[in-house]
Length: 385
Image 1 (cartoon, rainbow, N blue to C red):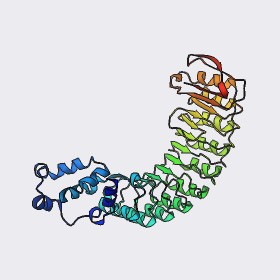
Image 2: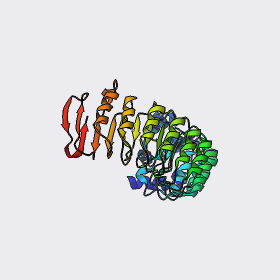
Image 3: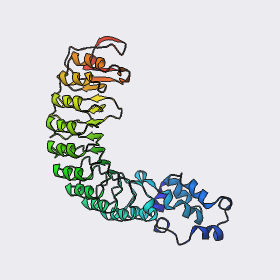
């Protein structure tokens, strides 16, 4: 069935339209009982609940159902991930012609066969698109972002993960034409620098989530620009941005008071100054990440941040921050482990777990809120929860 669906998606005749109108088909050529008993508006409503594969099946039943199944109103949200190896530029162009202004959400994640030309056609036809996922579309360049900027002003969510040809020019274009953007993922777009970030945030001041994992050229100055313009920012991911220091984190804390989730995994230059700034300036922050980001909220993780010590984590605990995860922190001692649970009161019931790895012995653990007796850490590793 997957192969059949792919053939249908590639078929110009089916996806780009039929010369017959729905009333003509129903009145002249289709004797199906369901088509006689149910109004076409009701049938169309039923079709709107079907997924892409089922719609492709229905499109092969009859001419009337072909028109119903491929009506643009049924294709407002499309995810082609399951067809990624078969999706070519022509598929995207045909779908865009069929859906037109109906399409609101499109995922082309992993569709490596899609390039700039087809996405330009898409942008021209689907000007009401709000959510676009181009994760892993490695063929696209700045040209695609220019097209989105020119035609897709309603875009709110854009994922450009691993689109390695994207440069600062793309961000300048996006900032000029996509000012409603709320979510942008630039992970592993390693050509991005502070100049691109500055251009982006000047135009897209409503950003709520910005993911910059693996943007290794970013330095503290980029974070200063974010601080100046992104006051609505809720989530920021700086994993593996190894040039970021305490100065950059302090700037973020001073300007982004709505911040709730932060990933600093692999930012090895950070010290307790960053933890102090977070504790004092970001009261809504409940998800600190110093590891590759976990999915469970209310967990504090720390990895490869070897300059962090008891003092910083104790302060976090005392102001009521998230339950902790402490791997690979050589300067952590018993005092931190004892301070965190007590500092979390009265919210200790939200403690999901605490993991401690690679701490120098001897180290014992007592958690009065977990109803567990003191015990040594086996193999320098402990989970409590």
